[in-house]
Amino acid sequence: MATKVTARQQLRAGSTHLTESNRAFFKQLLIYTRLRSFFKDPAEVSRSLLEIQADLADAQADGVSAEVYFGAAPASTSTALLHAIPSSRRATMRLCAFSALACLLVMLLPTMMLPGLPLDVGRLPLATGATVAFVLGLGLFFSRLAFTPHPRTFAAGVFGATLLAGLGLGGALPLLLWTRTPWRLVISDTTASWVILGLLALLVILSPAFLRLTGWPGLLLVGEYVVYAGVGLALRQPLAAAWLKQDWHLVWVMVAALIGLTLVTALGVLIASSRTHRTRRPQR
Amino acid sequence: MAQANDSQMLKGVLQGCLLMLLHTEPSYGYAITQQLAAHGFAAVPKGTVYPLLMTMAKKGLLESFMQASPDGPERKYYRLTAAGEAERTAFGLSWRALQQNVDEIIEKVATQDGN
Image 1: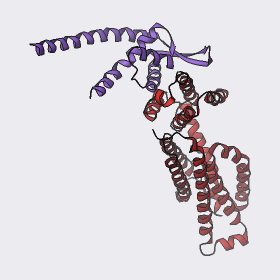
Image 2: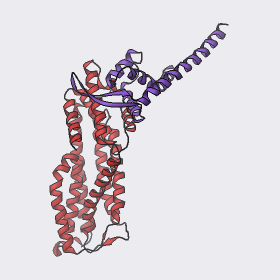
Image 3: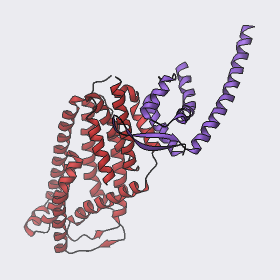
Image 4: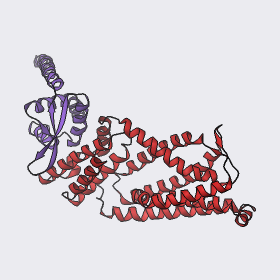
């Protein structure tokens, strides 16, 4: 942990010695490399990035820009660099563990949303595998955008990815809820309500750090969690439950909330991306 | 076409060239690319050196170490391992044999063209 913090601080400090365009290029390189290095030791990846950053500074001092120095195919060079870094079992286990924890936190709530349904713990390993695949896919997609020269193309790509992620998550969770395994637990409404409140409290504690890490896309996940929690608690209150169970009220409430969240998040991402890429280099 | 052929040939010998350069003294990425440029390899994209150095380290031909630089933060230096020295010697022998054979063919064809 100390090594990772030190390396990231060094990377931040090192970027201050680069010109604006060189800094932007290095940032693209950093984003691309980080989003494709989930199975690599983060410290090793950081050391490689530090090495390249220091050399870019040397090249800059000799009047050579980062783009010219690193070459016309930075994406494939970065991919080759990552292939050369050995895979880390610890990094792989960490990804799986975080995915499992995220699935536990995320799935527990929707699973308890409807009163009386047994808790299917066998879904956890299935959801973990799906989450790992989703994270890797998202990383690969966003990394492809890292070297996009046009700010609008980049912003459109991020907007589209956020929409897909939101719809995918919003759609995948109900789909996962339909999966049945033999390992089920039955819990009472009172216990479920306390668990839901506990998870909401945990969300309040974890969400600032989570949102700092993920930015606008994280708001989508946090918002969906709050929606599921709200519905789960409401369905255990007689008056609210009676209204929600009429016609399609429950479905409409959830659809409206999820669509609203997705749109707000996607717009936030689009605005933030457009602002960030106003300083991006123009097309060569 | 000529450029593509040059690129293919270069891929085959770049590792050997790095082994030769690092035999002289340990060095770091930017300095290595400068040495390559000084020996006629200015067209080599500098970024391609980094994955090659990492691959050579992964194969055990090189080892890296951090060393303070006079003008900034610590730099990552590379030096040959014992396996790297053996590989360098083998490369030198292979290259001389290959060069001799290729030169013979070129000379023979040139002589025939002359006739």
